[in-house]
Length: 130
Image 1 (cartoon, rainbow, N blue to C red):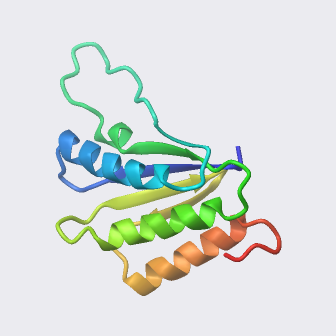
Image 2 (cartoon, rainbow, N blue to C red):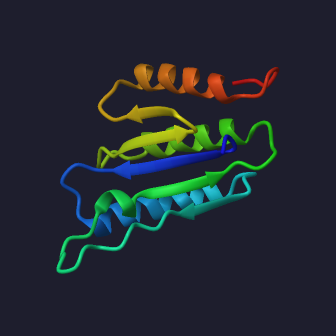
C-alpha cells in the first residue's frame, strides 16, 4: 500500500523495554498528526522454548497516511525532530513505503536531511511541496 509508511526503530544493545519506550514516544507524537492511524506492528510468535524477545518487532510502527497530501511531510518532520531530541541515545530508523527503503543511523544532520528530502520527494504527490 503506497499510503502507508513502515517504521522500524532499533537501538544497538538496547533492552526490549527501552526500544518499546522510544517507539511509544514516537507513536504518541505521530498520532497528533493528520494521519489515518499509527499502529504497532505485532511480532510473530516466539518459537517454542525461546526466551528472548525480538527487539526489532517491538520497534515496528505502521503509519497509515490517509488522503492528506501533506501527511508524509508531517510525519517526516516529526521523525526528524524526534531524532534530533535523542541526545541520550542513537536510535536507527528503517522507513519503508512500498519497495522503497530509507535507513537512518550513523549520519550527519546534513546527510539525514538530504536522504529524507529525496525519499519524501519520491513519494509526494505531483505539485505537493516535499
